[in-house]
Length: 179
Ligand SMILES: Cc1cc2nc3c(=O)[nH]c(=O)nc-3n(C[C@H](O)[C@H](O)[C@H](O)COP(=O)(O)O)c2cc1C
Image (cartoon, rainbow, N blue to C red; front, side, top):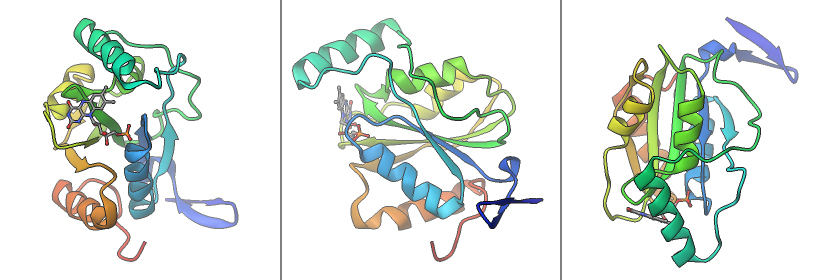
């Protein structure tokens, strides 16, 4: 089914994916934008209510504390709801080997039962963790697919990396041949 939006014919929300991402320094958002281009999906950004410190030592200390205690920080209001979508891409930087707490908060606060979730993360080549397992624990009734890890913002290879992952997971909605 298609609908008319801004003079263009587009698939209905349930037929196009939602892309949700948290990013501290921009890399994960660039990957999210790449996915949006390839899939024709809708993108929403997650922001913590209380911004994280700018200085790395303080940031690292806070993140370690939050990760160890399983803290779910408050979020600023988000511009969309996952309800109408059946496929949801979920992106986060790798923080201390796991999902960033703001993204964990969003997953925890939304009912994603029965949704297909495709997790992706940006990292710097360090401890990779198990994002798929973490997302599955936060959303036990969702169908969580294989996670994609991208170094930094993926550079010039990003589109190809994403295209290969979409083909492999077969569930990113449509994958435009020439975005
Ligand atoms: C607090 C903190 C912890 C991090 N921990 C890891 C880690 O365990 N493994 C890793 O590969 N990269 C780690 N990184 C690097 C980020 O995952 C990497 O820079 C990523 O590209 C940032 O994405 P963003 O620009 O979307 O925030 C860490 C970065 C920060 C700030």
